[in-house]
Structure formats: C-alpha cells, structure tokens
Image (cartoon, rainbow, N blue to C red; front, side, top):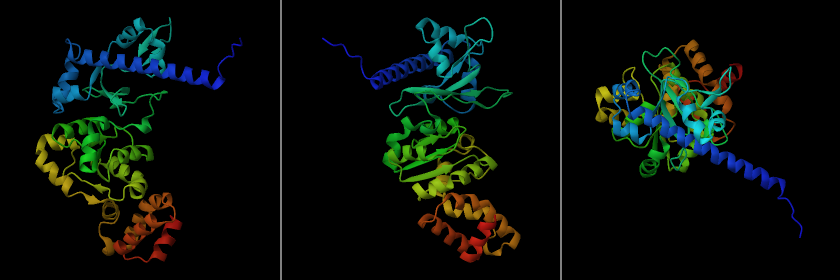
Length: 340
C-alpha cells in the first residue's frame, strides 16, 4: 500500500489554517484579559473614569467590548504564556520580545483597548486609546496579521449592520468614541474609521451591509476636511448619494451629543449636504463672485479628485457642477486642471 504525502498546497493550507486558529485563540484570550482588567479591581479605575468622562455608559462600553491594557508592561505576556500563546501574541502585534534576557513585553500599556471585530463579532485586533493627561500619541495602532487587515474592518460595523440595512444608510465618523456615543443615543447605523480613511474595501463592507447612502461626519478640523477630500473620488464613484454633515461648532460628534443631545444631532444629520455641493462650497464659497485667484486656488484644491476620477460620467458630472458653481467654461476648467 502506498502512502503518498499530501500535496504541498494542502500542507500549506493546513499550516495557514492552524496559524489563523492560534491567532484567533490569542486575540480572544487577550480581549477577555483586557476586559477583566477594565471592570474587575482597582487597576482599571482610571480607564473607567476616562470612559465615563467621555459620556459612555458601562452598558455601551461592555457592548463594544472595551478593555484596559495594564501599564505594567508584562500583564498580557504573563496571561498568554501559560496558554502557550506568547509567540502568537508577538505575531498578532500584542507582544514584543524583551531586548535582553528573553521573554516578552506588552505592546499596549496604560491604554483603553477598542477591538476591531469580524462581521461575526469575533475580535481580530485592537487599537489603544491614551488616557489623560494625554502625553503620548492619541492612538496606538494595531499590527497587520494573517487574521487582520486594517483596510478590511470598520469599528462598530458588527453592531451597526442590522440598522444600516434597515435605514439604507450609514453614518461614518472618525473616532471610536464618536461611534459608540452615536449608538448610545439611538444612531445605531454608525461606524468609526479610527485614525484612518475610507477605502474601496471599507466602502464594499458598507454596501454589503445594505448602505445605499453614506452620511460622512468627520471631525470639524483641517484633518476632517482632508479626509473628505481624500475619499471624495471613491464616494462619488461608488456611493453617489453620499452627504456630508457639519457640526455647528468645533466639536467632535461625541462632544456635540453630550452638549446638545440627540435631537440636535438629528437636525445636523437631516441637514447634511450632498458631497459635490459640500466640495464646491468649501473650496469656492463665493462661487461666481470669487476672484480669479480664488477660482484658481479652488481648482487646484479639487485637482487631485479629478485626477483620480477617470474619464466617465462621474468626472463629467463633477466638472459640470464646478462649471456652474464657478462660472468658468469646461475648456477653462480643463486647462486649469492640466496646469495644476
């Protein structure tokens, strides 16, 4: 009887499957560890206080599986080692090798942990949010692993999926706390980008969830405007019904909700403007009354969007809208775009 070894492809597939399974066990154990530190005992008190200071209730925090990473530097390493998952923790970006003497140390230290989850709700990775007095970077970002690609996840999507399908719409905000506060106050079709931007993959996730419209509400600062601008071509191409909501004061969405309440937020969302209108009014607020220098500056600001939009209906529609708004002809605009 011959005993043929399995094809090489099968061996590779089995190795990849076992790797993914081990990483899933590691991340699941880490999630339980972080949640335990947040809610049990005194070590997580500062994190609990911070979460409460942002207006997030314990019920919401538990629903989104928030946790706390100990400042000790070895708490997670000590939790993963007995399960034989320390090496997996390194591959998942949760641990790093100690510089001397062997062993592992924690990557996330003294931070609130927010999990990125699969569509089924399984944790895949974490992002760490700094605690007051905020002397470090606001967010510590997750590492890519065989089970996690940042570009293929959205914070809160697993919680928002049913509401997105029901509403036919998704609210897109920047921060995790913005997303959680929107859910807490009834806007359960909200997702968070968390220190990143939209992409084709993320838009595909929202379309698959049933979104026919996006309402983008990024932070009211230069970064928020750039976020809209950087993603405008994708939104115009794939979700033409995209609208942009602008808060009346320089507040993030969660701050606005705490101060003004859900009815005020409902008005902001209802008054969200079509993306094309927002782009034109933001870059050329005086429209046909603008000076030649203002028009040139506006066209330069929009040139990257036109560059990324290939010839076709979407580009033509945006060019038509810009011509009407600015009072310039198509030929003038095309010449300005070529020279910008």
